[in-house]
Amino acid sequence: MKKVWLGLGGNIGDVTSAMGVALRGLDAAKEIKVARVSSVYKTPPWGVTDQPWFHNCCAEIQTSLAPEELLDACQAVEKVGKRERVIRWGPRTIDVDILLFEGVMQTEPRLTIPHPRMMERAFVLVPLAEIAPDISVLGRTCANRVDEMESGDIQKLETPKGWWR
Image (tube, rainbow, N blue to C red; front, side):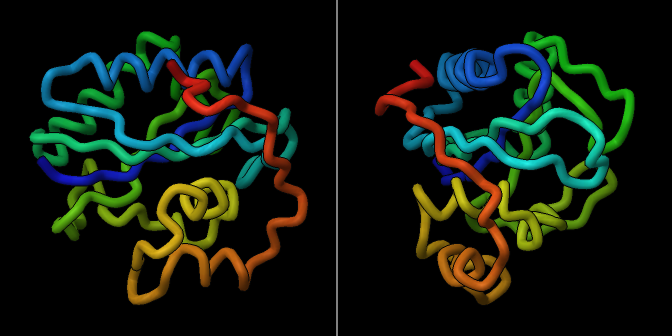
């Protein structure tokens, strides 16, 4: 089993519920087990800024799947959550991104690992630092990068432990 870190988010409908459904769907697969999940954070939109704020979280999972197979599983739970890919960085009900995959660095047409823009996105790094502060990404820890970036608009929401179950 390999450790993998996922980023989840959305800004249409009950996103926290949709993230919970996605995590439970992944956890139900025999090849995937959810190990840790961050709190939920309310974050400003990135890229296309004229849209509602997002809710985001990160999760650590363990999987026996290959990266592309895990991508298929992530896209399947997005489909259950009625994800529509209309505008890049636009509004969505649910988004599940593979951020890091233990022992894997790849640049393929379908999937790049580590996620190519994660180190510039506070909405990814803040929840990731909550569950994996010492994880190294391209030679820098997640916590160090968060300390150096502007993340003042990000609001940690009150979520009980195990909120996603």
